Structures are given as C-alpha cells and as structure tokens.
Image (tube, rainbow, N blue to C red; front, side, top):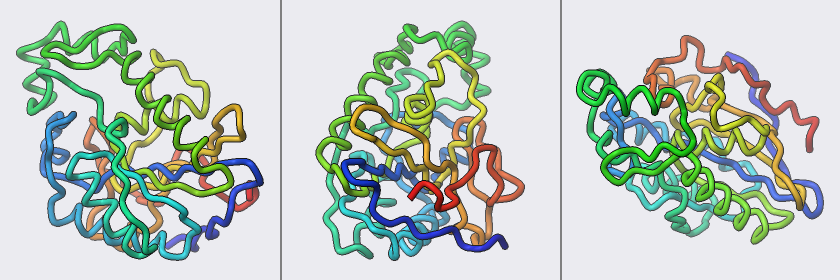
Length: 247
C-alpha cells in the first residue's frame, strides 16, 4: 500500500479549494447503464465507499459540503458532512448531465437501437442535444461552470467539498486544464474519488485528480465512469496526485 497523502490545509489567501467527489458505486454503474438524472441509490459497496470517504476527510480542513440533489450523491455526502459536523447543502446544478432517452439503457442497447445518436454522443459533438429532452455538452458545460464559479466566489479562502457525478467531473477537469469539450477523455472519473481544483480569483487550476487512496482496503477497485471498467490498481492514476507542494 502506498503511504498516506498529505492532509490538505487552508488554500492560499484569497483562493478557494474545491474537492469534487464522485458518488459511490450503484447497481446501474455495474451494468454500464446510463443513469443521468434518474434517481438511483447507492448499493452496499457504494455505501461502504461513502463511509470510507467520510473517514478520509475527517482530518481535512473542510468548510462546507455541497451535493447534487440526486440520492446517490446525497448518500455519499452525508457521512462526509457528519464527520465534520457540517450541514449538507443541496446544489441541483451539480446533477449529472440529462441523458434523455439514453437513461436506463446500456451501452450495448444504445449501439443497437439508437446507433446514430450513440455515434454522435461518442464523437462528443458539443451542440448535439441528446434525444428525449437531454442536454447538449455545451449546455451541460455552462451549467457546471456557473455552479463552480459561484461556489468559489462564495467561499474565498476556504475548502469546499462538492459531491457530484462522473459527467460533471469530466467537465470540471476540462475547465481546470483548458481541455476542449471535443477532445477524447484520457482522465479517470472514479466512484468515491477525490478530485481537487483551485480558484485563484480569476481561473481554476488542477491540484490533484482521481485520488482513491482511502479505498485501497476496499474489496473492489473503484469503477470508472461510462466504461465501467475497474482499475487494476486503485492507487494508480494518469494524473499526478497532490504532493503537498501546492499548499
């Protein structure tokens, strides 16, 4: 097992640290089924991941806990807020992307029955509105960006936890790194992972990504968003984790 990572303290003066956390695993995650804004609860393993995440954050400086209003996110946020003695604040803009008629379908079903929409989704067309009342990537990006900016401005000099969803994390990563919406994803979006960005008053930057050290003792490695693949090593990441040098 890798050594524990340094415990984050307060961000630099005038800055805001946001710790974005993907909800714990659900049964639909295992089935590679699109959840979107369908209100699915955590399964037994997801609840255990939420408890481990709360324990990990018990020693961190956390000034506020926000969550998407969907059950799987709220269930993940509750043990985090409880160990810090903080209320859970609901922020609906942290919801997952609205996937329209994709919701409830597996990848294989969509490839067979909605092949053209599936192809355009896979191509990451920014202005393609998902059928059945779904969101375009561009509209989704605007929603997430507005929520991040407001949280950062409301909590200058503080550290904020926000429990959310894999699609939101993908947008967060792109905002913090300048990665275009159209670019293929190479970054992990893991259940119950800690993903830290920092706002300096004008822009966001990446601090650490896909940190799942607290899940090392869990019986299963965390699942990645969409592909639902398990990571062979829960401590491995393509993006360097926080070394403490940024604090």
